Image (cartoon, rainbow, N blue to C red):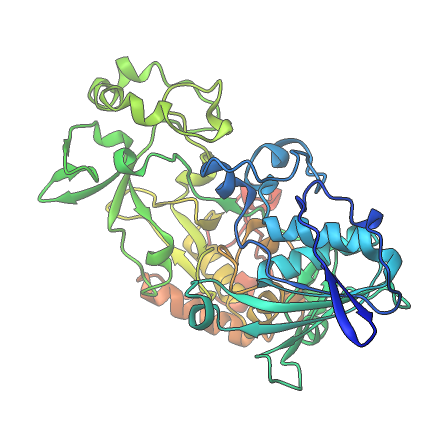
Length: 449
């Protein structure tokens, strides 16, 4: 829509078109001067629209240039508003517009991150939080996102304001080490922790068949979510912790059990018909559930395959964290009823060689410096604030070299006491090995074998 002033009267031209197929750079304007773009684009993803059978979608393309596996999975999903934002910036850059749209806060961050990667000419940006529940009845974190395009030097940071009336930003979002951080001032303070983790973080098991694979036990009887009694060889039944469990008690106790069909990724499963006939019979009776799994990761795999499974799943002691909650808490988890505890795929874990190693690692991860750094990286409105990618950025060796070891040993011993185990000393800490390293595999940790 374009407004004209003719003889003191406003004249308006309205153009109705498909935004996905309209080239904005080819619009003919009868006026010159500053251009303001305002609007409220759809708050849905391309996958959601596709699921509704809508044809009002962008032409299919890997417009974020995701590579390989990421282009096939959820990483290729995007908000329609995000596509519209990028289109507006690219095609209207010549006119140096100011663009202000209502959108999810996640969309605003994604646009800024994409703009930096693509070197789009953004010179300033502001994010004003709004109460979407109050104004739109939508349970989503949303904002008024405003950017200036094509004015001066590029700047991909954004001032974050608590509401539309705020005059002072509560924090500054900015790009750091290739990704957006939520609080750049805090990030800078603890940037000595930016680097590469000395340990490999693992995600919990993924099976996409919770109604069949996840069980509860009462008086020795296993039941699935359908209420059916389940008969399966106990060798293939393991205790399971979920994100909600890790976010609760300091010493979480598994409420669920999970059936395990493989000990390593890609292992065959058909021999279960001989090794575990009761389990095989039960799974086969629900074969339709497994065949209906939509993720492409199961294509060409053995029947009843799982992901997020390996030797690391079966260590007795682990340090684990929920990926789903706003409060970050790292837990030490030991064996339960004589079996190693497994986690669902909303959790991340570091397998450890001993309880002592796990308690030292947890004490380090729960140090205020580490938690402050993590909180500066993550966005609490994200569906999954903590991810493996975030955890792998923790240079724990740098923290270990700076931390007051007396406090670290004290915290580790408090955790060991909860487990009913003896205390460690300074000598033990001096020979501490990171989980998964060659030194760890050789078990050269005095007092910790």
